[in-house]
Length: 272
Image (cartoon, rainbow, N blue to C red):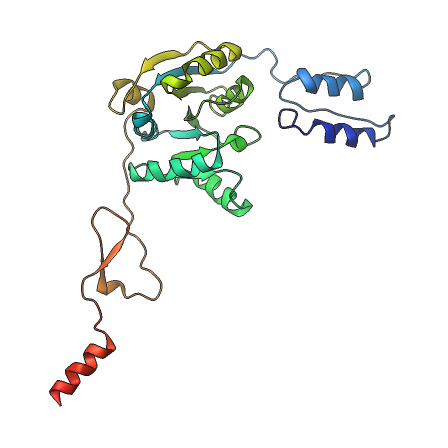
């Protein structure tokens, strides 16, 4: 809430509460603006930290430099493994576009962003959590406050705008003592920006130049998952016996088109 600009509202709400009331603060971090709130509104607080001395999560960071033409192919290969993959984009439009591109590349994915209704968000997140789809493409809406067990790989399809977002995004993997992998995909035009980002985040990634067929991608993603091809459901009001799936796509073609009424009348007239 601090990073997203809600602190003025939080301060106004706290100012409206009784000064001698009991207040409790729960936060994943206690620095910057959050610490300012704590010092202003908490008086001689008792502090309790959960797992303060526990071992930090084991995350392997990779930095892949790609050409713009190879970007989608590289991401599709990373998302093609058997593990659960969370892919981040900067914009809602970028998330929706990438889901379509991954589908064309043979990787089934779903999306999570602010342009979806709450019902659609819930369904898509559930499909990802229960393994119905292995890849979820999301904006930073999924970087905080959303937990899915067993995310093996986080992919920054678009490098985040600042290092805190990188930390929160990357933290979706390697949870509860497990290991995880984080991959940042950059183009040559983004090198300076990403170098600064990594320095501020305190990360020294394994750097590689990659294309869709690079061995490093399969090393990261693991063996490719088996693809299940589901036949498309027939359209409402259409006779499925009169149509067949067009090879290689989700469309349908009529094998025996129904003759028009005018052509039937013409045949009857000739017969009479």
